[in-house]
Image (cartoon, rainbow, N blue to C red; front, side, top):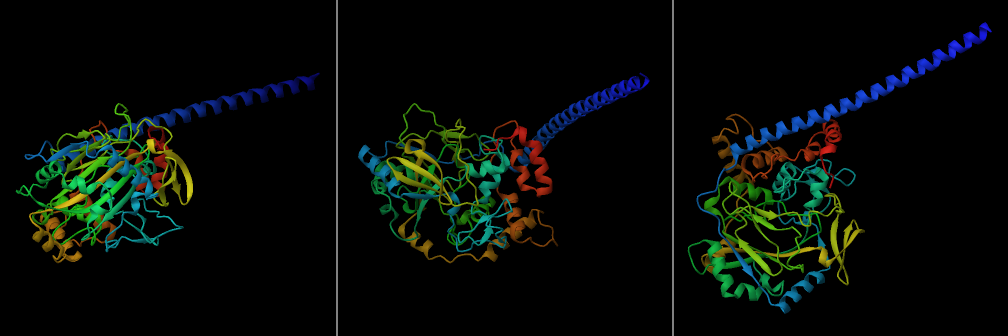
Length: 474
């Protein structure tokens, strides 16, 4: 009997001990959840503070308010008749394969010293992509666009992860370039447009050379196709200078030259046109508008709706512009990586396939695509001036860097005895010092969701886990 009592007491103690442990475990779990919740709240508060600080800092280095003389832009409507329009729409299909934007690499100088070898076929550095030959990692030709888009989320202030934003900006492009031949023969319908009196009068205004009949030199024609969720982030078109063009130097370097103002007297005036071929109903709101800043980067953003057979023309090398998100409400967004070979392939019967390394990722109908034609012309006062430009000697890279160095030292950005950085550090210095695209008009103008990828893994990975509740992955 005594033994039974002892046994019962022992069992009772064990049950009580087990209940205490379960209670402690529950309390610890609640404490951890509370702690995790507290960390997220603190992180959100920190994000707000950082966003405000960056916004205040950025306002000190970017223009505020509209500039004194607005940039010129003009719109065109009903550019082609129905037959011409159908020919152009069929032409897009006839090209069959349209590569992604990472393949726009035309300069003889591929990098300025930032190149790194690929690691297992990829580029670990978040700022680098595989070069055209696929043996090195280099800065994207438009790293200026990528950096601003990743840091801010673009004109809409998206809060999306690094990989998600990279995917959104990988539109599909087919470009034709020429320094001498007649590019209007590459795409049917352009000759009639370029020769129309209405077009010539408007382009003379955009050229802004003080003459009613400038000599127009078409040097770039192209097709840009976007799938739902994609956009063209804000940017300047590639500038041309007497002595420096996209065929010699990386495009981001030419953009730094433009933003710096140090080559303004040597800038070639341009006309950029964007026309739309997609066949949407007029009352369908698909997003994807063309946005631009006619009053300069400190002015308000304007939008031109992407209606079929309409176009806008402007000098895109001096006026910041881009496109808003196409079909922004779509949830099933195709994911693309900068390290893969991405292309859009026409299969017939109005069906297109997004191909990733030769594997089909998704199929779309032609009606699911945003299709635009783009063209650019250089403006000269006469044919003789254009011939002079073609034969003009080019700058050496050292001459370009020396002009930058002198300016940076005069501003105190580089100290008297400080060495000029090399490679990616020099590129970052030039981009940070000169390129200042507008911030999105949002309470938080900073995209904290892409920050972890731009930091070392041991710092970025934990931050990424903490930020995940506040970020979209696509």
